[in-house]
Image (tube, rainbow, N blue to C red; front, side):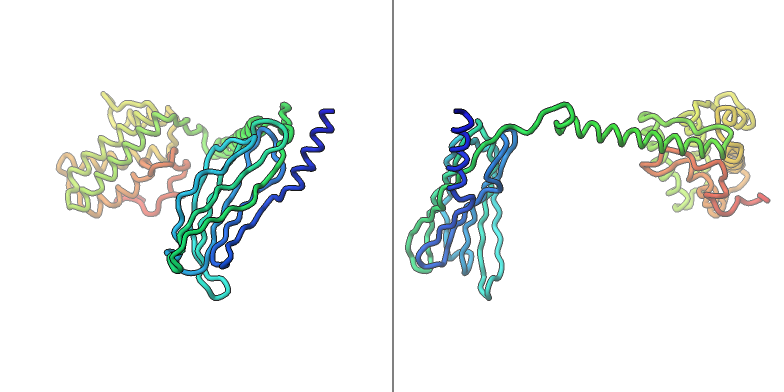
Length: 320
């Protein structure tokens, strides 16, 4: 009996149009109503669109605000309205389109009764109204909800596959890096990344001193910044250490010898400038080029690979 009634409901729904068109006598304005589907699962949504179209200027017809459609076995969950214009058969056409989103309530027949559109024809100075025919549909059983058919599960499986792929690619990259360096680069946490970004901001501030012709304060600030970087990136403090002891501590913590040599060069030049040894703008610019990879821009999380010559061109004065 239940199946018989359900079949009758489907036949009634099929007899009703999925889209209906109503046009006034003058042909100047018309309204159309349509559903995006004539069958909808109980746990899904569907869209219903009313389109008012007329030829002429936008102010040839003035539309009163329309009430939402009357619904049977459906509930309104949202709506959007869009006004456009274009050229059709050499005439200007105005289009006002409203799309409603409905959610079914129960399995069985459902109906949408479009609203009546009241308008003022400003050219002929008359009032009128339009109404599209009722549109029917049927609500069917919900989509399957098995363990592998729910959209949340599918999204979770897809995300898991992406994470697994990322882990594989990360492992391959780690092996490649390990082949180039005796010690892998340290993992960068979110807190450490924020600290590095703060250092990068300070580095850019120091470079402005060089552009202002202040190489001395730049040298002092850069020396302090390099020591702060070592503490953030490798947990190595420069306190109570000579430059040599500081460099050896960095190498023991995992910094490659080539980059440790670069830090040593930066500190020696900065110390010379700090203690009155002279420091030109040109020398400062070369030190900026050497130091910049230690303070990458936002989004980068690593010191460059062990070979600095693959990243940097030129060497500071006095270097072979």
